[in-house]
Length: 231
Image 1 (cartoon, rainbow, N blue to C red):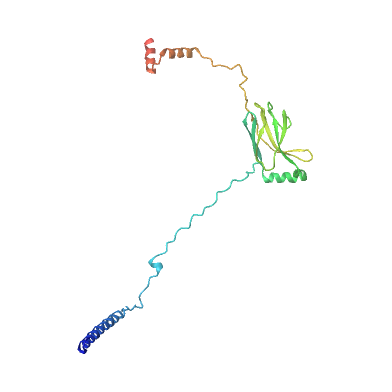
Image 2: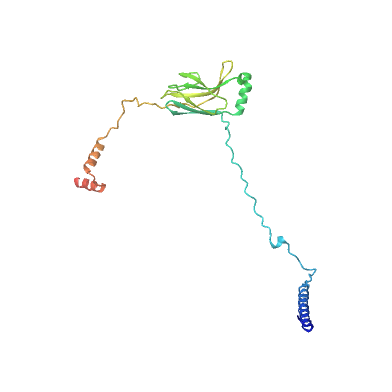
């Protein structure tokens, strides 16, 4: 057991230690609580906005992609063109304007509305002035109103053809809308010419060929020298 003097000394040291700790804590709080001085701003001072510090970059407008122009359905040419694809087949394509269609529709009325579109094929082999009535023979191929081209199987090589784009009215009349050019289907056999004319060689050319054959591969200079020696 401690006596009273010893206990008093211990209590005194404890009080000193506690007081010193409290003092240090109070000093730190005062040090941290000091106010940071604020610099006064003059009334004439100017401020820079965010836009001035970091100017906005204006990008050019994006390129506007425009769709490619579409090809027209027709060019209002009012014509039909034919060409031979092979000895048995003709290819035809045509273009009729809406104005032409409307004029024919107004001219023939309800007969036109109920008409049948056809391609009339004429065999005009040997005919120099075809007028639509003097063909060797003709026949019709039924088409539709939405077609702009057609393959025609004529099946006759070595012939000349003309084609009409027309309509057969409900009363039986035939109306020509457009008439084509003439085309010729090639033959599908060998030529029937048995008397070809061969080129005739003159006497001077015969002598020249003979000298060439005798040259036996000599150059032009050697041939010239040989000719000079012979002369």
